[in-house]
Amino acid sequence: MRRLRAFLTRGPWWRRLLTAAGLLFVVLPLFMVLVFRVLPVPVTPLMLIRLVEGHGLSHDWVSYDEIAPVMARSAIAAEDGKFCDHFGFDWEAINDALDAADDGARLRGGSTISQQTAKNVFLWPGRSWIRKGLEAGFTVLIETVWGKRRILEVYLNSVEFGPGIYGVEAAARHHFGTSAAALTARQAALLAAVLPNPIRFSAAKPSAYVNRYATRIEGRARAIGKGMYPPCD
Image 1 (cartoon, one colour):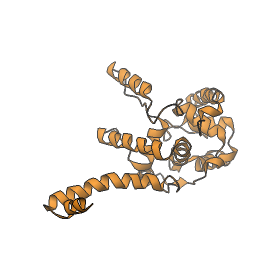
Image 2 (tube, rainbow, N blue to C red; image 1 turned 45 degrees about the horizontal axis):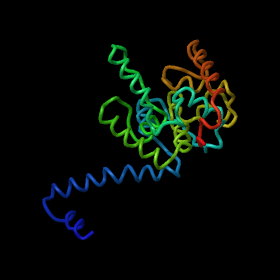
Image 3 (cartoon, helix red, strand yellow; image 1 turned 135 degrees about the vertical axis):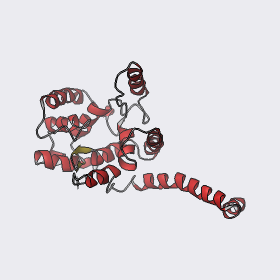
Image 4 (cartoon, rainbow, N blue to C red; image 1 turned 120 degrees about the vertical axis):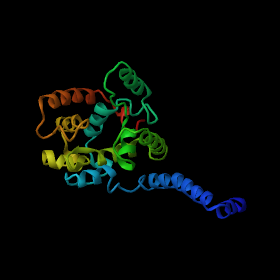
């Protein structure tokens, strides 16, 4: 400890500055992950960005037990069918996306719910390698510290369901005039169906594509047993 203190307080100013920055880079993310393991996430970078863009901000946090189980199953069915089987990364989906890109197709997402949660809560939207690297680090942290149930709880409370609409409680009230706890299977499927592009798609006024996709999600959600969604026993 004495040697560490001496290293931090002596030497060139630039070395002390770099050391302090490095410690902050390691300690701050872990501190934030620990805080949000127990406390609601009040606001995310995307919420602030959309607010500046003029979309408004509607966000009401509810506990996992106040969300209809069918909503959790629908989100997994739509976004991450292997949610309980991976440690943050679906390598098969990532490889498929990279293979498709190599074949000339548009690069499509292979992100899990854990990765999306890490991005939504701690980072900014974008496709830079720096952001993806930070996302990977946060993904490992939340998988380790939070566990599956908390990850899905934070995801469902922070994900964007429409312009200025964040979290399933605000989405349920805005689109259907009900609570997250009272969502039906169809309503949950419609909400999950807009997740790929909540600015373009609407759960309240679904297009033909959204209706078809919601029907597929309903079928997949019915096939998800209790062991396939949190607590993933």
